[in-house]
Image (tube, rainbow, N blue to C red; front, top):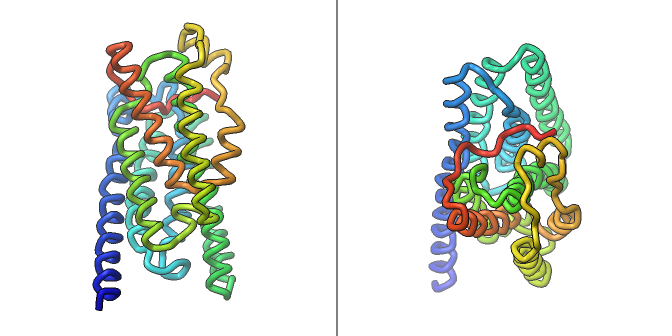
Amino acid sequence: MILTITYQALTVLKDAVGIAGNIFAFGLFVSPVPTFRRIIRNHSTEEFSGLPYVYALLNCLITMWYGTPLVSADNILVTTVNSIGAAFQLVYIILFITYTEKDKKVRMLGLLLAVIGIFSIIVAVSLQIVNPFSRQMFVGLLSCAALISMFASPLFIINLVIQTKSVEFMPFYLSLSTFLMSTSFLAYGIMNWDPFIYVWFLLPSHFSLLILFGVCFFFCFMLYNIQTVSLQSLLLQKKVICPLVTITFLLKFQVPNGIGTILGIVQLALYFNYKETSGEESRDPLIVSYA
């Protein structure tokens, strides 16, 4: 009887954190709205890049497919949140194509078709895999790669904020939404015992090492003596580089939402630290092209 009540309570709690993750993800999806208001107002994409939306669309599509009953069990909330995310990213891409220059239109259309093609191939190949576990493993690994690439992107923002000592390009609500959504789905994955949502190896030592590394990573940057440089020189000379060792560690020991949680904490800590230092509010999300 007690076990039944405990299981029911765990199920309710799992659904609750999953729904919370959906709500927080909505905040993450709408965070580029100020940027597109600016694009529509100026009838130009200026120096903004459409690549983040292309990557985000691919990520949402693959993860949406992973959450379906055809691939994994009891992950319907993963499907719903990523379906909404895919719709948002598609709208952003269409708006970007509408207001960008002719050469970028062709490039963005090509990338959009490539995303659709890649997703179609993934669906077709996974449906040919008869064994359910192998199918889940195949799509799960691809989902991990896509999610990691999305959550690793704030590493650039973190470096940029520290270099410029300004939160102008790291919006507070974007950082908060990243942290809350990642934490919610981290808990959801643990309760659903799905390693592709929270961790691969399920070893406490690995997770402890990641947390320790994340804290050390943050404080090393905070204590490092950084020279004052202008944002323009950083962008033109391409001197802002994400630490390779950090990415390697994250790829090995942690999967998407654990990464998102750690990076969300770091972003929020940086935001409050540099907001007090510079007294500056953040503006549009960091979607400028530096490549």
